[in-house]
Image (cartoon, rainbow, N blue to C red):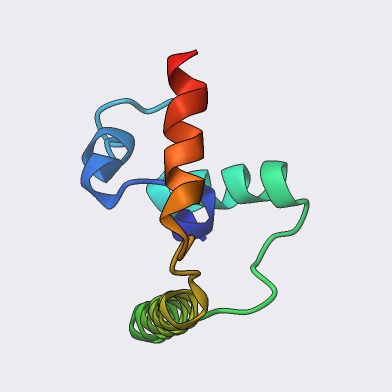
Length: 98
C-alpha cells in the first residue's frame, strides 16, 4: 500500500515514532488511513510482491528497447539518400546567397 501511495521507505523513521508522540498513529494504521483517503478502499485490489513488480518493470523496459531497436533499424533501411543530382544542391546554394 505504501508503494502505491508513493511513500519512501527511507522516510518511515519520521512517521514511525508513535511511542514518543502519542497523538500519532502507528505506521501501519497511518498508511491504511492515507490509502483509504486516496483510493476509497481499505486494501489494494491486487497485491504484487516486490520481486514480481521489479520483473514486470524490467519486461516492459526490454520490450521498449526492442521496439526502439526495430524502429531505428527500419529508419536506417528506409532513409532516403538525398538528391543524386548535384545541380539541386547548386540551386539551393545559389538561392541562399541572394
